[in-house]
Image 1: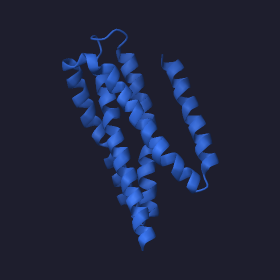
Image 2: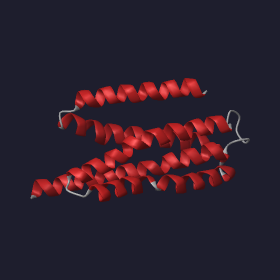
Image 3: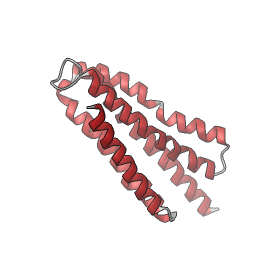
Image 4: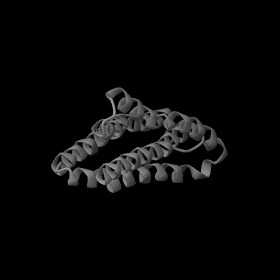
Length: 159
């Protein structure tokens, strides 16, 4: 019973961490679009590329929420719902970011850095240790390399 409670607590911690991490991601996308015409180098193409990159990595994040819920005994529909719900903060944060960039243009580099740091923190603090303890460290490493390569190819291909 104690082990099951501890496992459920870890699932909730992961869901909370990913949901909180999605907020600065949405903020970054909103800031990227809001900065068009205000900051040198900010264009629709760069904002679009940022949105595509963040959108692509949201698929595994949704799975990272849904799969532990399914493993914990929740139905597929409930697990899917919470996976989607964890990402719903992004559009709201995006609107807020686009509005705030109009007011706080000097904070643009810090907002982008915060979003990147939050993502790295979640991966290093939760996902990698979980993969190692579940015996899936090789799969985790391969997935990381594929994901990194994909993001680099998109960066070069999309400008």
